[in-house]
Image (cartoon, rainbow, N blue to C red; front, side):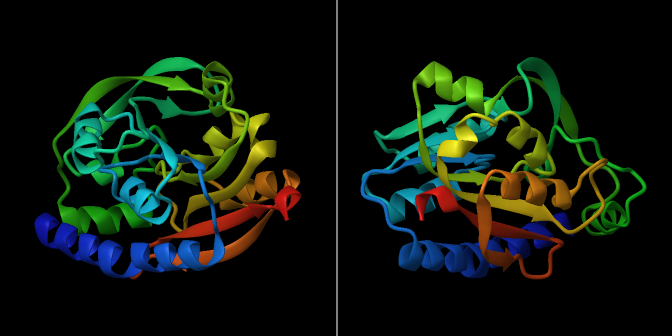
Length: 232
């Protein structure tokens, strides 16, 4: 059942979801030599999408799972790709992350074991999945940019399974110089203390306004595109 689900999920992602986002970016957001951050890069599909759209882009691709970092490198043989085996959050720390054999769901967030959405996932994928713990270094977006002397980011995509707000808390300086944000928003109750309202308030406070929503077909999440009104 799990493998059927993954085939169905990847079909929807490739044929519908990412294609719509790519079309929107192509017709609405133009860059010559952008600096782009792909945070929660997974296997590098969106990293590749960015290179397809913006030929002269420099892309920083963040993924804490070491095995997936190797896949990203294989799929994106670009000289302007910077692979970062890091997690981004609200503060500097070292922790562990549960790496599931369903690598789409690996997260630093705390999962609500009683959530209705989790029960549905278990029904589809099976109650037991193999997993192991992996040590991971967590840094903040502010600290990373200061260390790398990055003063502005043209486009940042954030998909870190319910940990998005914690990342934003670690970006209070660089957020002022980010032009566009693509962020995944959960429409389920799987993660403890998750609040898309907090994300919305944070972005609004920092002068971002919503441009577009993309619901993932048949799933309980969406991607939202925001623009910093400072750069209108």
